[in-house]
Length: 457
Image 1 (spheres, rainbow, N blue to C red):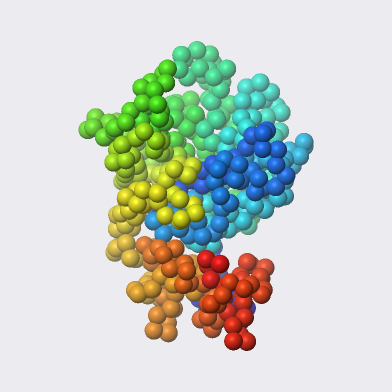
Image 2: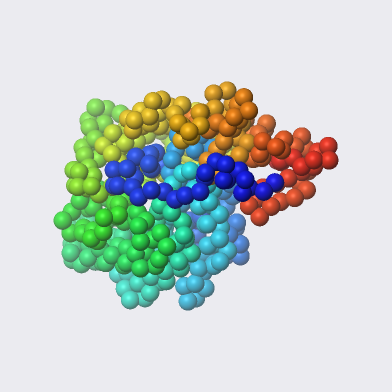
């Protein structure tokens, strides 16, 4: 039951090779946000466990099966928003419970050969203090990232950190709607935050010296982030994050408001061109200068919206972004992917992401959507989605030989009949767990021999 033999056989050890800016964007592919989960916060929660916070906004506890389900639709990256102030002590010490829980979720991602992006999200809005008590805000900011950079320093480039969410703008300093106030000061504050973020990681050892770091744009708005006042640190492994929710009358408003009339339909030629023109701006400003860009969030409301318009908007943003060399990460607070059924609530949205992933594979030089990571050393599995070994990559067996589970293979469809075991040990016919190993492997006994507990138990 030991793993060493299998690990040496498959040669699974080793870290990610140093990637260029263009290569990292291709590797990141399509992304998905674990929204309204580890960033859930609020004084009303008053929880004592990470589970109380993680589920407070209506989503279930995150499992590795969820991440595998997301991957089966062609996603290569998972953004993990976090509210680090939850359970935090008064001297800004992060709760070990939260730090370990975030690491657990990160492991779900990276062990399945995906990329994880971890940030400081809204976090009860404390970023407003940078405008009112800058010194104290920087103390907290540096304390948080100092602890995180130390804790995760031995993770390779599959783990990326993001300086903050979209709170990097302060209307009390400069009002971006009326243009009143001190604009250079407001931008300068964000530039200083991002510089501190880079300095913390570059000076903290391990893989942090070479890790790609994601820097929030001003308000993560495209026009603000390409402004001359937004200045990046001098570092050849930084990326820029923007968010995209345009037009907000379609993507955000579910009913009319005093600032706009909710749009039920979307998709005219003019509206499509608006998205194209917006994304070309960041390509010209950053991508063409070898600075990777990630759309850290994009998405729409689904209530009071034409379903076909929602699909068309998602396809347009994600498709145009990847065409321009930009990584799009869809914001999903639970409106798209059903985290219990492990399928997309609208099957056509799930299919469009599979199609986009297939197109992306082809554009990146892979022969088809069935191409998988194991070739040419090992063939792709042709007739099975049954995962019998997961060592960070998913392996199956056909004709007595190892084969790689292809990216298009939905492992969830075979969950009832599969188990994370090894060739020498069958799946258990029952769910009676006898032994749980340190790595989470679950074992039972059948006919006086060890057997592996099925994934759905």
